Figure 1 (cartoon, protein in one colour):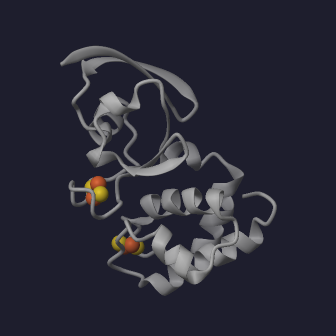
Figure 2: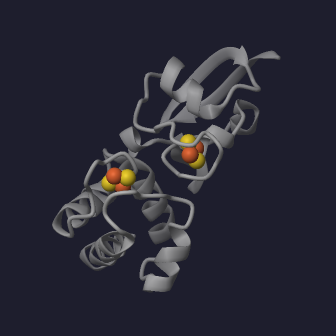
Length: 158
Ligand code: FES
Ligand code: FES
């Protein structure tokens, strides 16, 4: 069904005239040229397409545009402009938690959502927080270490 839709993406108002049943992932990548969110499984299982929807991490391959009307969406492109992202990125690099990088945008978005709710997570809480995000390269220990490092480096910021 076609509809006029307004939402905010990376802090800017966006107006669309499109089918509200389309997947948020397609709208971001095709209409808004935001290629950071990736299509992995397309079924809500890998987290490569993760974005923040009103500060909550969601898999944009499973979210119809209709659920985003009037909401705030942040993709990795928008998040990359923040000081929190810089802390996370450095921590991921220092711990060797990025290899092919395919999962990294989704991982960072999930980590942001986790640290926003819980600035000092335990290993177990990090595992749960990232349970929707798959990485086939690094092994999760480096990712857990990176998030702990970021939590420490960004104390008072999260
Ligand atoms: Fe969306 Fe895998 S592409 S969860
Ligand atoms: Fe390759 Fe995670 S770094 S899938």
